[in-house]
Amino acid sequence: MKKTNLLLIAVYLILVTACSKDNNEPDGVDNGYPSALKGTIYYDWATEGILKVSFPDAVGSTFIPDNSKLNNFDISSDGKYKLTVVNEQTLGKYPIRFTLSDIANGGIVEEFVYHSPGLNAYCKGYLSPDNSHIVVLSNDKADGITILKRNGDLVVRIYNINGEELGFNDQRLWLPGNALLITHKNYIIRLAPPYTSGTLLKEMKYEDWGDVAVNPAGNQLAVRITNHVYTMDMDGSNLKQVTTSNFKEAVPEFSPDGKHLLVGTEYRQTGPFGWMWSLKIIPNDGKEYNVDPIAPNTAGVIPVVLKGKEKIETAGGQMIWR
Image 1 (cartoon, rainbow, N blue to C red):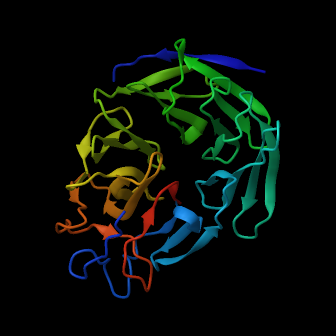
Image 2 (cartoon, helix red, strand yellow):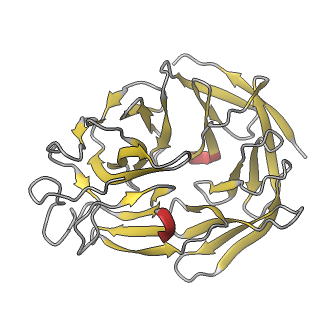
């Protein structure tokens, strides 16, 4: 087994709000959306499972039925493949089944059972941009950051950064070229293959920040700072606030072409470990958009409303736009 201690190299560089016709309707009629809006949003909602809505027709449906054993899912960058990570725990055993399947025909492309070194049955997995690797995330120190080939073969396992243990809430996101973006303490770090050293992209000098997202081109980030969403270039420059309201915005996701941002608005807690939010889309043009549920929204804000429905869609778990 290849074990790597990461060397960091610094460089300078519960109310569902209804839409009002005159404020929050998408452009067009009968819940139509701008023709330039493309792709499919996948989102987890309560006991309804994983739902999806495709643009520009805004037709919604169930993608994965509710399954308490589903640790997480992922959709490939090209939208062709689905990865599911399922907990198959039994008494004294902790297998996790990874299944990569073709969305078009349901056929299994790869499947393997993974055993966490930390005996954690709740690990999650995410596909690399070229669909060749999977990063496995766990909150157990013994698991570190694990990178596998998509058939389950181990590539590397990273246990710490400069001798410091990985944090409970650290993010690990894929970048083009199978590099990883990692958040650790107040740092955003880029880690390129073979994953033995990292580059500091930005030090975040804020008490409350997170929910980092990467655009498909790998040259821009979205991040929540306190209660609102900001964008910045990959090197940490050009920081701009892009959402505002009297509430909280979080969990941004870029559209497949990078021209829009999906934002969780009215982000609120529903229990000790539960959160929910309403789905709205804004242009990714560096301007600031008011996405308030009550006050008039800035022109260009698009609430996610399914065809034939009236209320904005809500989510409370994973959210992906492919």
